[in-house]
Amino acid sequence: MLNDLRYRPRALFCRDAVERELDRELNFHFENEAEKHRSVGMTHEEAVRRARLSFGGQEQIKEDCREARGTSLVETTIQELRKYPGFFAVAALTLALGIGASTAVFSLVNTILLKPLPYSNANQVMMLWRGGPLAGIGDMPWPERQRHFKA
Amino acid sequence: MATQRIDLPRGTLDLLILRTLLLGAQHGWAISERVQQVSSDVLQIQQGSLYPALHRLERRGWIKATWGASENNRRAKYYELTRSGNKQLAVETDAWRKLTAAVIQVLESV
Image (tube, rainbow over all chains, first blue to last red; front, side):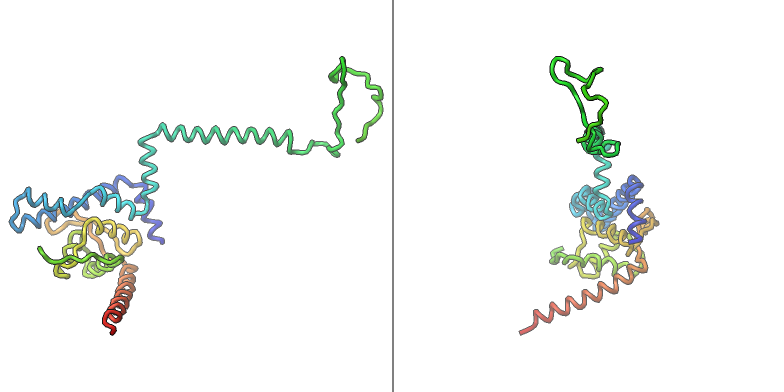
């Protein structure tokens, strides 16, 4: 567990170094394999061919090693990000706009509809208006202007 | 060349690698050669499974890798057993003995 914590950051952040080491390690194996075939009397070409045959797909081996290192998902994401920055920019922008818009709408709704008015007995506050040709509030001689309303 | 090869059961590869490293630090190629020789060519470790296994064991902390010069004076990655690797080897050897003994018992029962 502790070892894992030391191991993974290096695999992740020194990725190029780790990849180079892996290349060198696999190459070393490959050359030794070819050397072995040569030492029993094969021609150089035949030895290399045999070694390559027994080696199988190098890319697949590397991918499996990456997986064994336990960082393949993060690594792939970073790689993709480098390859398609536009796509990631659009995705980030979409998220930003979406979150921004919903926050804005929510704060509006929150102030207008959800929060109680900042008065005591806010549920007794009334709104008055006149109908007819003089509609609107304006400066108005309310018939019983002096009196207090209570609902 | 015509020796019959047997596919390794799951988990055996780790055990073979750890056991081979008990003899001292080795690089990947030497590990696979040694297993092949000692098993009279019956067990052949493919690179495709050897290197992922080595990296996995290193991540677990059972082996650790250092770069050194090989017999033919090239730089090679040497793996050696760590202390927890030693313990793991004991645990896995024991488990393997129990498993094979039990399987044999079943196979030879009447």
